[in-house]
Length: 363
Image (cartoon, rainbow, N blue to C red; front, side, top):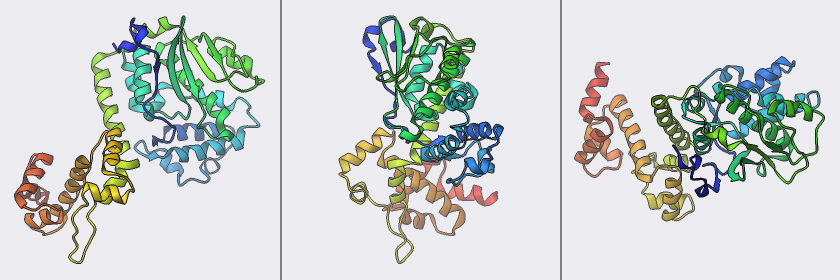
């Protein structure tokens, strides 16, 4: 068990999410959910998707990935269309985020041993969720408290997102336990709304409004209760898949994507220029080599890993689609000797460049 949720609570002061803001890439399920909700109240999908490059067809793609600002544009469209008509919009939408909405992230939560383990996992892999408000957890006497940070959320959708994200967290925890979760307390930093009674009925306690910050508190004993669908093997498998998914998402965005772009060989007079070295990449990004290494390490990769990835992709393409010799491919990838390239290619794929080409030609 993760120690923070064991009996040695004196060691657990605060637990922060792995991300520091909401601007991380995410899947399509949250947007699809909100578009479906809006459709029930007469708002067409084209209205909900206005200002984005999304289409109704895109919504059905389980592998599609969007940036957070695209989801934010959809949220703004939803609030503009229904915010006045449905004052409890954030509450209503938040309750629709069931554990099944979150794909492999949700499946990992379901199979985890306890709710405490799930919370620790969720904070570590929060970028696989759809949240904009960031929870930071800590212990108080007789309570386990989640402070809901909304400081970075745009003001025009802040209240909607606080309610949506808090209610989504509550709904997911209820799904995991197999019963409605009763909170010990809940506090919000805005004035009491007309639907306060409805909110109290859902979370099991009347919230306090006009408070310094947003938070909710759980009974600590619920954290150690075994979850009904816990499965150690499935839990381990899901953790591995979540790690891989986070790695792939990070690699397609941010500093890793910028480095990768600069590692693709530029075409010179003969169609070739060697990939940039790490010092040249750092200069191109206006930072020191040490800073670049630190940024790449923070997202779980390195210059060498990205260079290998780019070289492998280009090598496979040239071996499959061009008549270039293995030596020519090696030169175009920046290797001084063909033998070094052959060794690297075998490390990447388990086979030699010549064998790889023969197999692809047969197909």
